Image (cartoon, rainbow, N blue to C red; front, side, top):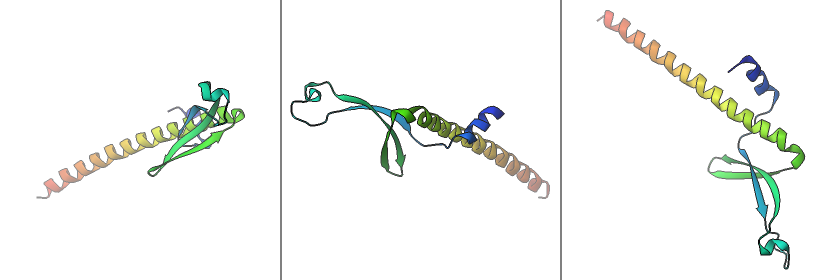
Amino acid sequence: MSAAAFVSLSAITPLPGKLCEQYIRCGKAGCRCQEGERHGPYYYRIWREGSRVQKVYVKREELEAVQAACDSYKDYLAVLRTMKASRMRVTRCISGECRRAQSLFR
């Protein structure tokens, strides 16, 4: 990941989840949505907390900012995965060196 991408990660507060577009029925008798033409689109950010799914309405004016924050969170997770993989490679290398050193003293 480039330095510019790393800076952009810190400029936006990351938000877990993704944006979903939904069309709804209002439930009023005689409304057009009862015949199949639903109201919308309405936008929601949906994410999981433990075993529960959370959902929050997103205003149209905030769509771009929320999408950027969700993308930033995905990038953040990718950086963490990369760091974890690097840490595991280093740990395996160190433990291999320790085993080789121990075998010398046997």
